[in-house]
Image 1 (cartoon, rainbow, N blue to C red):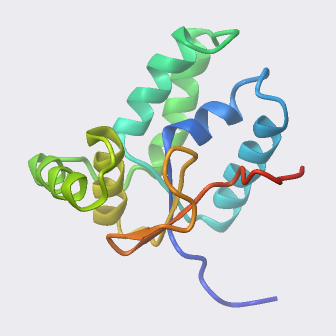
Image 2 (image 1 turned 135 degrees about the vertical axis):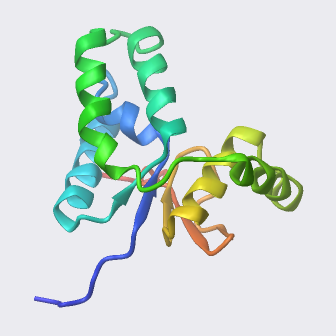
Length: 148
């Protein structure tokens, strides 16, 4: 067994949504397993933005939306992964990252929050797998040939 401390890993909204979407098929299993591993390793990180996006999308946009009370419980549980609140500095850094990467403001804000939280990895389906930016390695847990 390795004594190496796992790197902090920031989780984008889509991963959290898939983990709680019973209609996401294999993606649900992959996302749930990833989140479980991050819980076990005590290395998961996210931001208030991720929790806000999860809450809105889980009760309104899933094929079968989850109940508000259940979404609130998920937010409460994952709230321990929020290591810092986003501020004006994150917004300004997001605009710099937009210029640097060409990502949308919202994706750049995720990058800025992940960077500021000290994460080394960013799990996201929305950004380029393997891309390294702002000290982060972006990983898509659903590569084209993924298997559960």
